[in-house]
Length: 311
Image (cartoon, rainbow, N blue to C red; front, side):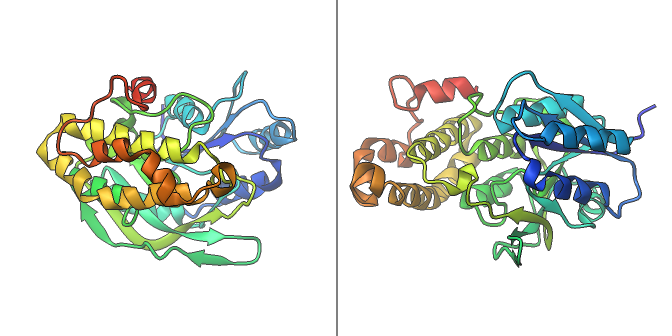
């Protein structure tokens, strides 16, 4: 008999430095309902496997899944989802921490009938923790939550400060399959929110996001701009098919998408020797297509292979 209510999924690859802290934060939760922790381990060169085996031996609700090859975080999350026994799922990165009341608070909200609950978080270093300024307390429908996601404000584009009904992942969920892809969280969340009827965002900070200067998100990457562009193109492509409300939602958040691309372009001066405005000018045609009221063309465009891969 399955009595698990919640499944926590943790993708792991070369993560030994902070892994015990992460595991301890998930195992020492104040909630009284049964939950499981699913560690999805890719072949690592450090002691990540030994640490996982240690926790598997110590805790009956710790589940270890070992991959034979290295995958990106999106694929690892779905490997975990496919094994999850809980009615609800949540995620944490292997260098982050949960507040002791994370599961309790999120669970008490989601059982009120929400499809997803989103909380505030701390940006965390070894010496201090600062809560995010993008906090909100509101209930949203599908279109409103997608607006929040695309504005990257009331719903930040992270998987880890949220709790979901597991059934949301049983339908079409779009994400890039390649290992080096960026912004896969945005893609997954967009897919989930298309299906969500009711989303709750709460102000309380319950997740500690570790600021790691060596993580992929903190390193200037010349592909970052391209992947962000492809992500926005994919979202517009799907909104075009979903109808007027979603088309309007994307159009209303285009300026925020442009700011994101401008920021990415500003990181590329060393690689290309020019500033953000010149880099954006190189993609003038693509930006015009994103802004257009007409359906986004896919065939023959720079994002063609990426969009087809994600479908």
